[in-house]
Image (cartoon, rainbow over the protein chains, first blue to last red):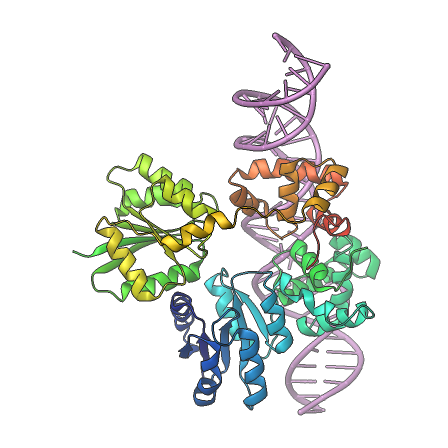
Length: 220
Length: 220
DNA sequence: TTCCCGCTCCCCCGCGCGGGGGAGGCGGGG
DNA sequence: CCCCGCCTCCCCCGCGCGGGGGAGCGGGAA
């Protein structure tokens, strides 16, 4: 059975684009649209979509409030994929804190968009580099560790992957990381690939940026 | 005979949206798409569209340059409709000065989009006056870049090198930086090499780490 | 037991990256 | 005046990186 999606965005153009991209997939079905957050809860109740692809900035009820409302007042709520134009949009972190499952940039390629929808539908978390950042700050000054753990859980990094990311964020090459962890370089490559995939990073540079932005590693 | 349109935008999602909106009209036909400004001139020569719906912010060649190139090197050039996300985008006015015929916000409703395309096809100019006014208001601000400037001087980075480092720290590849700065990739490589040498970094990842650790770029 | 998952290692392959050179234009300062 | 720093673009070249596969092993959950 196909993945059913509800589109929520105040710009009809974006809705049309998402619909065109998603409907091209045989296993994805767009079951409805809404132009603002206020319409989301009743629509979800009626349509029961697997995934809600939702803009953060919307009139009446923004993505944060809509996410909160969904999780509070709907049982077996759908997965929530936050769609936005900007990497550094404060609303995004609010939405993620409110319980959204993923974060997707509008400038993503169609394949990435489709991939994101499938992933969150399967219960995976999906975060893009700069998005995780204030997550850490919310956990207070005491716990760099707690923040790091939170990020780990969000991105579902394993312990080993976390170690590898930490070493990447210290500027080590794969070979150096391999030496440090006393494993083969091929092993490190596997971990690095996993980290990149889970963080939504394209290369190790973006992964390191994500590590800083999320508070997973701290400057100084 | 129908109005033929060429879509130029680096975001596939936007192209898909525009296509969906415009193709729903019997008298409008989307005859082609391009993802950057560099591809526009040859495409226009081949397809001879009535209207080019073009984003302003694009890699390789932005909307301004692409507009200029079209008007300069194509005879009987198509009407140019500038499409953008922001009302107060400096690029827009540059494009209009370069000879674009109209200006359209992405958040416009489908009917407005269709209307805009028909209008410019008929030779009408289309401007959103309210947006032009807001331009001037946005001119003054030049926030706290003083800290960044201090770091820049300490590392003896030139202004251009600082720009490049900033974009590196946002996870862009050399090609993307080249697109953003409207220079060749070889030029960017030169700047990157200079940055690495001056920062004592082995690769771009270490340079980005240095940028964060020095406060040249700040998390959050 | 069976299945899944994390960790480990292996292959091939394309490409972006970074180093090494060089060169032309352009502006400011000695 | 000439020189130098900056920005721009070009060449060649080696290699690290990242994606695509696959595979064996151990442990914990179903």
